[in-house]
Length: 232
View 1 (tube, rainbow, N blue to C red):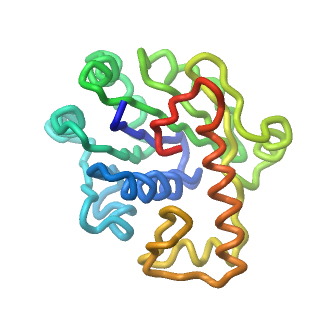
View 2: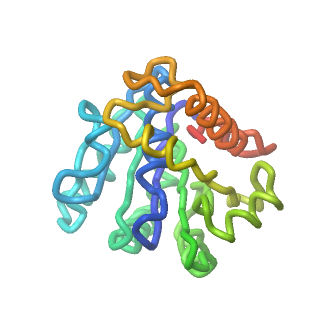
């Protein structure tokens, strides 16, 4: 697989979807392939601030927009995609994906599909992730514990990198300090490959923390047998 579709979703707001979508988008921007970010947050989309030239807001309430999203992702060979799904669209999105055999069709077209489901502090993700997994035929599923929660602390201790079972893995999104999180939120900041191309250049202590942060995320793809062509 040379190109992939990265689907970032959650059943609740504030779980870290936009942050993870930004990281995937920045990494893919350095991959040498084209990259488009689809945002389902109306009206303007949160990702357009960081991807003004290659982000598109999708009104997933409208059927023609749903069709356009799925058609676009399989019609342009050599293109990577990041889709950030709002919680209210998760059930509809994966129902369409399953009923149309989308991930199988994408695979046959040489496109991989990876789903990242983030859960927060107050949520037991097992019911949601079991249902999403049942909707997938060839796509991989990464269950991501949000940084700062008790679940994440236990997960990090048990899984220094990530744990894989079949086509599903568990991983933890590390928590950033308040100072570093403030830098990350600046317009023009890019994660990239250790921030060498970022317009916003943080101080050395922030850059060091971000280096450790990105190393932990890159460890996700180092699990034997996992799809290493995904951004993470």
